[in-house]
Picture 1: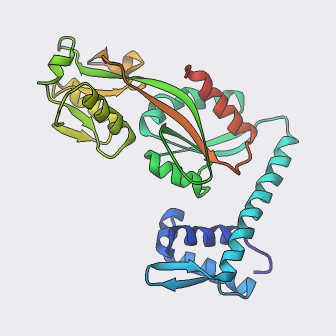
Picture 2 (picture 1 turned 135 degrees about the horizontal axis):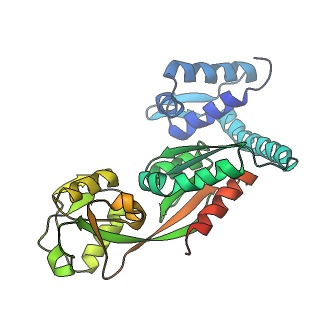
Picture 3 (picture 1 turned 30 degrees about the horizontal axis):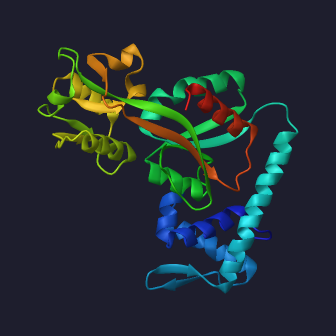
Length: 292
């Protein structure tokens, strides 16, 4: 290696951030020996030991810490160079990676991405699904350009921008009558899996309404929940976007909650991220989707 390999530099930074070669390998989708080889070749190029093993994993040496500081500046300089080139172009182009939840991916993004494809055919958008914690971490580690997550969200060096306020609704089988608060005390609840931001909001609503309920099912997919509810196995509380179109609410009765429940979706991105024209367009479209 005769020049500094930016890919190897990014791998080294990820090893330090995650605390092990194996964890970095999992993120990158390559083998642990391949990660070790990249770091070793970087050390050979710089003629310095960058990482040392400890009882709890690995940590950067003094030379490694110095490289980490410069690595952030190098990454920033590369981003600025790419942005400068993009600014010279009239078209919106390039590649953007976006992380979001499964419900938003299914029900919110398709028309938005279709619009982007029609208006900006040279712009490529890659989408990854996950929970708020996983997505914010990926944004922090620069594996994703943007995240669309349920707020609140937190992370070091992140900018968080609210973009969409969405109502939750109660759903039951179409053959069942309209639900009220008293009926919810006796009917079986089919809930979203515990530990998610969506589930936390719903649990808080039950507590504020003075209801103590134990779900008969806990599922990780709102689409699976809708199927179970349509089969008459219980009721659920889900984001309105999941049943906004007639075809998505087939076999279901949809009603408003009293008191109402909302969630706030927001964009997360690194504070040092330079906004490309494509990223700006995505944020603009999300902000236009519905009022805050």
